[in-house]
Image (cartoon, rainbow, N blue to C red):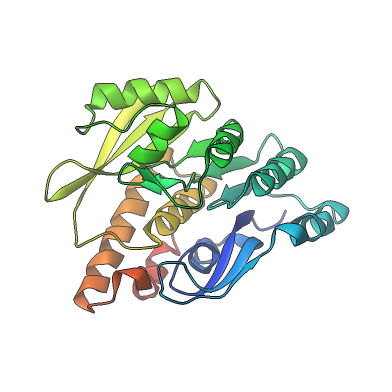
Length: 275
């Protein structure tokens, strides 16, 4: 018997509270060994006016080969922002190499928001992400990413729950059976998270607090992954993740922390220890 272990495939950013710098402490607090696999190393993330960026793509195969040679086993695999088709292919190879029957894969398809893809995304990379989605057990897209993965236009109005259910059902045919569409603004005061779980749907509503903050998706996906790996249901994991992130956002607003500094999650990290 050993401690549970999760591979975190994402970039490492020194200042700005995002990616592995957020995922690793959250996963570790939830009593799971976090194993970072960097896709890039940054001093600050790209919303800062200045940053140092080191693409780690060429090093990733040798880095991962060590784990293959050690015959490591992972109980969970989580992926975040990927910057190229080559990185997606490396991640797919990693999943094919390490996914056992008991291993679950969470894919956060970090592609865009508010109806627009990020500047780093081209059609080739978007198509590659569709290939990666096929390996996901849990998928955490926002509305922009959901419609992009389905090759549909961004809707002019917020889709109904029936429409969201239809879209998730279509996407589930490609692989993932647990999907949460995050951060849907239903009105000025509330944000809805829409869950699709093996054909069953539900929603988790949270208060809308302040403007968007960088790294929020990394906090949410990490708590979902940790909760699910700790044998909580998909719904329980999403509910905990959204409540935790809301509390951290409120605290960040109270401190008047700049939005690109991310979520001040450290204050409440201990609350995840028994989840």
